[in-house]
Amino acid sequence: MINRCKKVLALAGSVALLGLAANPAQAIPVSVVGNVDTLVASASLPNSSTATESGWASGVLGFTVEFDGKTECPKVGCAWQTVTGTPYSDVYAFDLLDDPGYFLVKTGAGSSTGHTHFLFQNISNLAYAVIRLTEQLGFGANITVTKISHVTEFEGGPTEVPEPATLALFGLGLAGIGFARRRKNKV
Image (cartoon, rainbow, N blue to C red; front, side):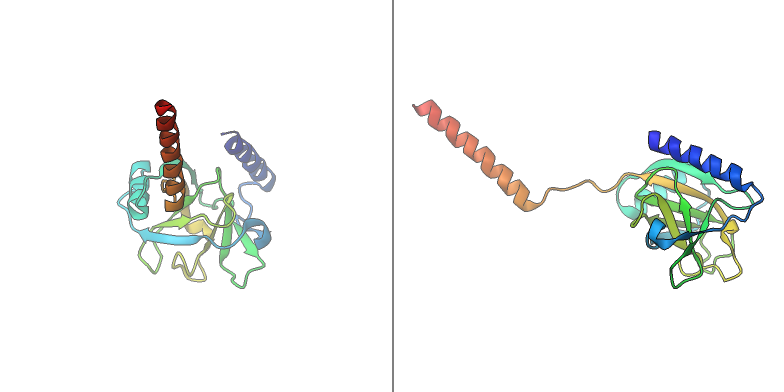
């Protein structure tokens, strides 16, 4: 929560410095934001409610994710930044509120996929959402990040299952305790 508050204050300060009418796509190096995040799935959902987006993401992933925040993008766009140092000209990064394992990008119409909701796994630098407009979202070269409606963040993930060797070692430990106790009772 403290991390989220710091980021919100930092983002508010950045917006104040840049002004709302500023170009929403400033430049940032790939070495800061990391690689492009993995597109997991896309769809056109009936609405963009918290329950709808979280339910769809959980169904796609096969485990429960929880809503962790949503950043609405005004007509001038969110604070997306052009990513430099990649071979692609359509890579953009967004400084997320929290460090989620998954995030959803909601766009307006116009994608060649016909979809408006795009679910990503945040893989490289969890502080940033890093996407490609043309390859992942299906937009042409003339579409900019101002086409993005909002970014939804999710926390949660699959439950860790212990490896078989760990379970076997635990079982041997319990068996050893049982034998030691049995032996003590015989004496």
